[in-house]
Length: 138
Ligand code: HEM
Image (cartoon, rainbow, N blue to C red; front, top):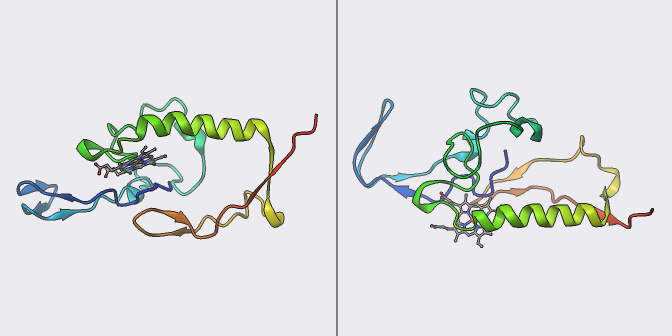
């Protein structure tokens, strides 16, 4: 839903090709809008809702083979950090969750959190998440 690089790295057509009803001339610069692909209601039910369980038991993965979901891009310019990122994300997130209790600042709740994005080469939250780590009391 919130891809880190919403338009991927620009490509250039090596030859003139026909894609559906469009002719892409040789040399044209191509931007692949994976932000829009990940929110396509023809593919994703309630695409704007945060439903991580939607991926359970799904054959679609993030490794560039399924064009419905391309957070790391695909093809010869696919993110070379993918294997590292996939390992580190689980490790870092689970360490943080395991070591602290977490609270959002200023009474913000997950339901009211501002999820607006700031568009750019990389996608950022318009308002940063301010999460407060609290000691775990037994
Ligand atoms: C969750 C973490 C990450 C995400 C979501 C991500 C996403 C992406 C995406 C979408 C691209 C463009 C791919 C394309 O155009 O097809 C990219 C390129 C790239 N990423 Fe990552 N990345 C992540 C982590 C990393 C890490 C950990 C490294 C390095 C250790 C890395 C290094 C690179 C490099 C060098 C490129 C440019 C590749 C090229 O131009 O051929 N990335 N990344």
